[in-house]
Image (cartoon, rainbow, N blue to C red):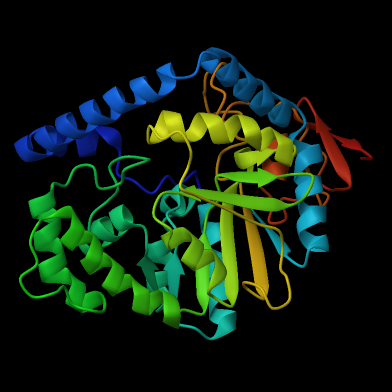
Amino acid sequence: MSSTYLGMPAFPEAAAASTRDERLRANLRHATHTIRDRRAKAVAELEDWAELRAAGAALKNRVLRHLDHYLEQVEEKVTAAGGVVHWAADAAEANRIVTGLVRATGEREVVKVKSMATEEIGLNEALEREGIRSYETDLAELIVQLGDDLPSHILVPAIHRNRSEIRDIFRERMASWGRAAPEGLTDSPEQLADAARLHLREKFLRARVGISGANFLVADTGTAVVVESEGNGRMCLTLPETLISVVGIEKIVPSRRDLEVYLQLLPRSSTAERMNPYTSMWTGTTDGDGPSTFHLVLLDNGRTDPGRSVPSSHPNCAGRQPPWTPRCRTPPRCAEPATRCARSPSTSPRCCSTFVNGSCRAGG
């Protein structure tokens, strides 16, 4: 099995170049100060902010303690709702699954919702190697893609670009990806947004396959949730005939009721909004409404690797040693370590053999 792939150059290598870029540093300084100031004001409006954060951390820890149960529940509910669940041990396996699913449709292009999981596994590059063109539809991700760039921020991927740079990218690169930028395009936000809207609309109407991630995955219903600010994500989630969602296994929440906590925390803490503009939820498939085929790819890619060191107080990561016992469908040799089993080609937690302290025990 390959090592965990994170889709980015090593930090020391990237930092050596970026810290010498004066324009980049100025863009980041302005943008991050603005975001932090707005966030502080939004958070200050809630007297129980600390309690909300504690509730979110408790929910995450509960999921991690019982991850095997919730993963089984997700698979059961998604399957019952007409979806198909796939298990990906690492980036390579996730890319094989997704490219295979797209090839099976006969399509050679897809539209994508902003997704850090697909950035993590390098999905766009994997699709390109198979002759499949992937179109980013989030405005910031579109800027990054047209600029042959990498995202620089988990929430604002093009935070390192200013308006004049974005105007130049649109003028020079849009035509090679589809509809060209309008003549006389300026760097005003309204004109840049209009140019992106016209460029993307024809792709939404033409695409037969959509790819997304998910901010949350509700265990007791099998419901996937995407929150966004532009509405482009909803176009990708509803218009294509086939929808493929790549979701890290740490995104699970036990029930819809638990979304109440996170849908208060997330918009204020990320984009300094009281309420997220677009919250899309879908459960499997529904005849005559939305995609007729839904595939859910559950991604490990190092999340259950006991060798990864993530502070136990971090409520949003499943990178530390999980408190659940890894299991798998295919019984390996009893001498194999638990992590090897958890990353076998079939990584569903439902199985035949369990592991205790790194050794195999019969049953389970």
